[in-house]
Length: 136
View 1 (cartoon, one colour):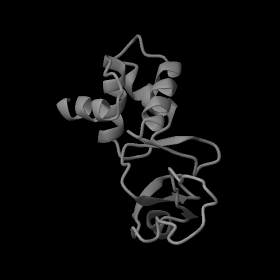
View 2 (tube, helix red, strand yellow):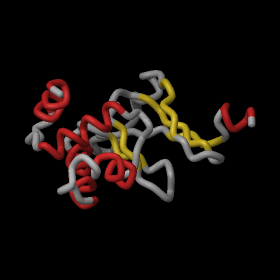
View 3 (tube, one colour):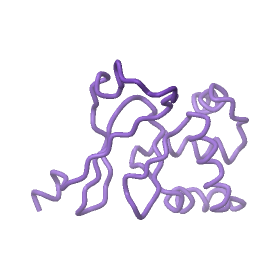
View 4 (tube, helix red, strand yellow):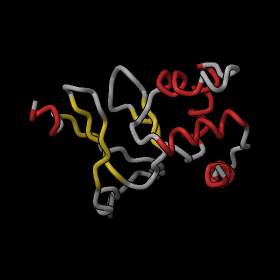
């Protein structure tokens, strides 16, 4: 629990009971969950939790850099507590999202004129059929 509180504080997020629970869930469940999945998992133990609170908390976590918002799946917005440089792979068959290692050199635009723009995020998304679905 202490590591979760520290993570929130590092990103200038005031730790509330609900924020701690949502961040803890993201850190423990590396499945790139949606708002609905997080709400369904946490609502039995936090009866005062609403989907709006989950959504707003995830928005704050993402805006402050404590989590990533993934738009790899056109139907669902997913969230990832791993903010280190990496790519994502979406299986078009089962819908699971996997983390893929990504060379740091790929994540940087080197010697490219950004025309004065400041890049704050880079997302690498791959789509295809995962190895489990290929075997079925």
